[in-house]
Image (cartoon, rainbow, N blue to C red; front, side):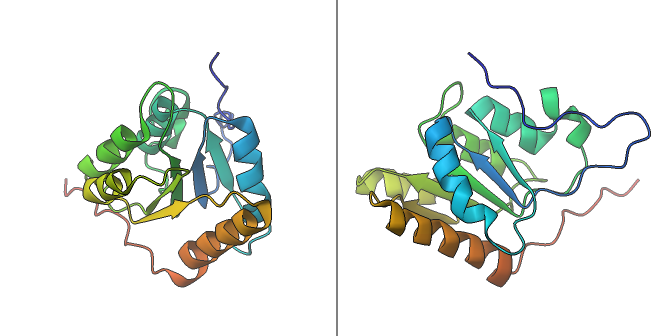
Amino acid sequence: MTAEPTRLPPAQGAPAPLPTDILLVEDSPREAELTLKPLRELVGANRIEVVRDGEEALDFMFGRGAFRHEVGSPLPRLVLLSLKLPKVDGLDVLRAIRANARTCLAPVVVLTSSHDPRELAQCYQVGANSCVQKPVRYEEFWDAMQAVGRYWLALNQAPPPPASPIA
């Protein structure tokens, strides 16, 4: 079963959609909702999009498929990426983001439940900006998600938008 995109293409003559602050890539509806609750309280996190698998994440980032109307839109200010995803694995999503000139500087934070140091090393080798282990206790998880959001949306200096090709 494929989840429907959370955003529909704009109607003819409608204004362009607002830039996305956070793209959450999470296949579990329960995990997504638990992650969204603390993020929605953050100042500056006005627009949060959720995609449910790796293929949908790549479609969003590259403006393909259901997100083709996004071509040329500003990139998310933060991508929160789960590793264990259907269709395209999280590490392959990260590799594709880093391999593309337009998306290579997008901030990507990997959210993981794993304690495996090899997985952590692999995330950084592929280009993760940060890796956050999901705490088991919800209060700690809430605090961690708010800290991640505050840092990336309020303190971090975002990379400049990609230069337009010279015609």
